[in-house]
Image 1 (cartoon, rainbow, N blue to C red):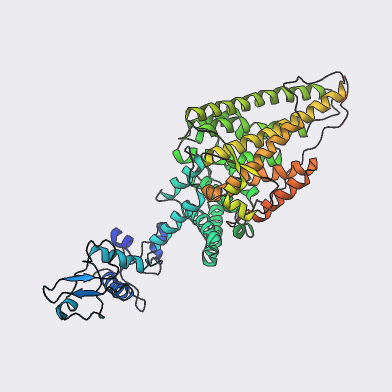
Image 2: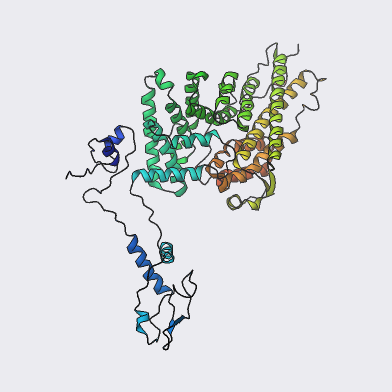
Amino acid sequence: MPIKSTGCAQCRKRKIRCDETRPGCQRCKTHGVACPGYRLPAPGQLAFQDQTEWTVRNALRVYRKKQPVVVTVSAADGSSSSDGASSPGSESGSLGLVSTKSNSSSPDVFHKVRNETMMDFANAMYLYASPQYLPSPVMEKQLIYNTFIDVYVPKRVGEHDAHFSFLQHLITTSDLRPEVMHSLDAMSMVQVGSLYKDKDLLRQAVTHYHKALSGLLKTLSGMSAEAVNDDCVLATVNLLANCEFFDEIAQVGDGWTKHIQGSQQLLAARGPKSMTSRMSLLIFSNMRHGALSHSLLMRKACFLGTPEWRSVAWRAPYIDASTFLYDIALQVPALLERYDELDHKAGDALEQVDDILREAKMLETEMRDWFRNYQVRSKWADQKLYELSDIQNFPTFAGLIKDRTLKEAFTFPNFMVSYLLSVYWDAMHFLRTMIQSLHKARHKVQQDWYPNSDEAVAEEELMEYVMNLCRCFPFFVEPVSSSTGQIGLFLPLRTAAVYFTQQGHWSMLRWCGAVRDHAFTRGMRPPNVRARDPTMIPKELPVK
């Protein structure tokens, strides 16, 4: 009879010799697959055996001692009755436990061997918790992935979203490049490790981050066309950028900005026609989230806002409200850049101002149309986009933030609604603030010129956008929004803090500081970005 192989399951399946390295063999690692582990332990290691039967019997013994029932027996007919509490589910004490304190004259009753029941098994499982350690490396990794998805993805997402679909697609895809697996491991381990304060997981996360970065640099060292057009390369850069949100990796990483810029360079090198596979389209849709935030912070045009790149989003697997919103919002940073770099000494400065105002008006109209349509869709679904609620109805936020300057906040039907509305209010604040500055500059040139009443920007409007952003914060902090909600805080929190500083709203600025200092409880912080401050147009433009 041939000797059974002691190699791992993967090597036995492929019928190759396993080197039996623990915890996972090197042959599986060389071929880029996860080693499923071994059916027998290594010499000198512990062997795990099924102890279920022994555990159940031991639990019953403990249960009988804790729940005695006194049984009395009639000497005439041998019938018995119980005076104590019977076992749960018993109709007439048939599952009752016999006490040795009874003075019955029928010893057969006490020495009767009782048959185990399903109720006994349930009691045993209640008394003895399941073991937390899973010896299989594959099962451990799957457990970490499941925990990561559970704590990272909001409980009520709403519509299909490219960001979450992208992560779930990667986790369920086999035969990924090693650097993708390392970056996915880094992101999942740093999230789970940060939440549960697991130092071992955090160390492993940093190790996987460096391995992913090294593998990425090795792949791109030749800058071949094959490497540039590889979806796995683009996926790795995106995952590494998300890792930078966590304190543990931000201390040793290259920075969120560098990864965002790197992913955009790779995307630009590929060109819009190369985005055809499901993964590439999911990556592209996912990148638009980070690209918009980065472009608004830097006040620089993003090529994703150009017509040829905007058309790519319409080939994505999911077309929803975010597709329309990002189509418009990604054009805002280009106007901010033109406004900041306006040459006030040029002879056509006035014409440049009018051109920017004209394009800004078009974007503003499209943004407002999007919001109205979103409201109509919400009414069709018989739900409100948002409602004001007392701050005490957000227990997690109220427990973390003791400052009660803001007494009410918004509740939303799901996370996607809250996130898209925060993007809308943030982009509108940037756009309308720029329009207000252009109106002031235009009026200084021609003092008999005034904007139309429907185009004028009142300070109350800008304040309302910022206050609406602040009213989103409690919902983002609640567990229903998971870790993604805290990421949704980054840009709006900065927008609010800058506005309150400029306008001297010190109580709200102090409240924002309390949110910044106490709301981030999942190991994350806003990334350090040298945001570009808007340069005000000079008070005097040349008059033609």
